[in-house]
Length: 43
Image 1 (cartoon, rainbow, N blue to C red):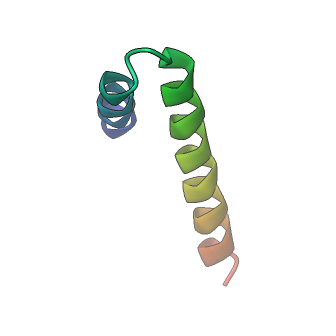
Image 2 (cartoon, one colour; image 1 turned 90 degrees about the vertical axis):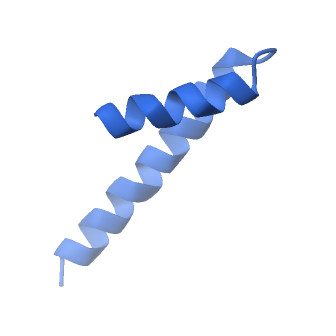
């Protein structure tokens, strides 16, 4: 979780004007990571 919040901080710092975009990017990377984990663990 610490890595995720750090990642979110970086993204939101880049997008000061659009803070919700940082949340969207974080969620998208989370989703990608979760899908990759599920895909790899199924083998």
